[in-house]
Image (cartoon, rainbow, N blue to C red; front, side):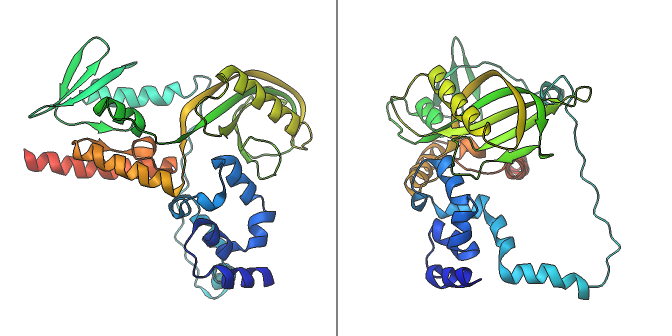
Length: 330
């Protein structure tokens, strides 16, 4: 309690990212909970460089741990009248052996039923703005469109629209390690976060647990890579991260058994680097491509570290507004 009061005094007028966290949960909890080390693993930079926008978009859950809110949540129900209205249960979709393809196939079928053409493996070389429309040059052909809505990374979009203008926006690569595990997992969690100071990985996601073989499960280990221009080849990076994870997890109580490494992959545009410098560069680039007439949307399209749920909400809102715009234009 004393550390929290001291933190509120020390950080009450500081609008920066780290100070906002310390003001909310205290310096001591920030450090001892592992949140500080987790953010270091995620962004590979001094946490003082992280922009306050990241707190506002991904860390407002910390507000639930304010003393005033805790007391209100703890004691208010005693004096509140009973509410007989029940909250409807969430619907869960169980993924079968077909994997996520079954979900993407449903989306594809829905879109094609609306006379929407889907082009796969399209290598976009350049985008030209004409008097009344846009031309997109693919590898081998050119198509014309009235509007362009982009969800691809801003650097790629910049290269297509302004091929002679370099873009130095920094992204963090995401590495993923795939495992089959035989043994005992001492947790029922489907997602495990790494808040310890050791180990480079940040998250384990349990994708499938066989009903017929209770001792067998599958999971993916994820982490980010520090930004660098001339780093080692992907295969070497994956091997290094594999060794780092297995050494760390072998000391943990979470898994007792045999790990079978099934391979890995590196996603070039994993996360935006949420420093104030990069956020400002991204906004300037967004303004440039939107002045060019292209709409930007999504985590990659707007260099925006949003949850999947928030991205879906924003996409729905955009579609509604865009539909109104088209209706007005006739």
